[in-house]
Image (tube, rainbow, N blue to C red):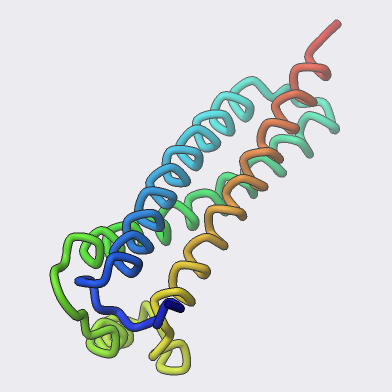
Amino acid sequence: MPYKDTCNLADGVSKWLACVTGSSLRAAAHLNMAGLILAAVLVQRTDVKPMATALGAATLFLAAIQLYLLLRIEIDRQLFDVLASAHGPHDLAALDDALAVLALCTRTNASRSLTARSLGAFRFVRITVVVTALQLLAAGMGLLLQQP
């Protein structure tokens, strides 16, 4: 039987979708924290050489992206945790209305299915992996620049 994408958390697929999304967002938040710590260490160790200064600036830019991602991921994670712990149907339109009142969502993004919301959240996970990989690359370059 094909999956019908309604947000009835009594149906097992919707509940698992919310659980997996929440767990993935938790992991992405931890990855963002590791990247921010790495950025702080790298910037603290950056010399005043032109290449090292550019590397430090790039690291700070990536850290700013990670801070934004961390905020968005934490908000989404908590919302998916609520969805995963719910019993019975959930009113996604009411959630969208509340998010719109707080200017966290536009009305044009409203009325998305639970699957579309999960896919959007996973986009943050993928971006986090890329930004953290760039932080690791910058750290490696920083270590190479510091060698005599």
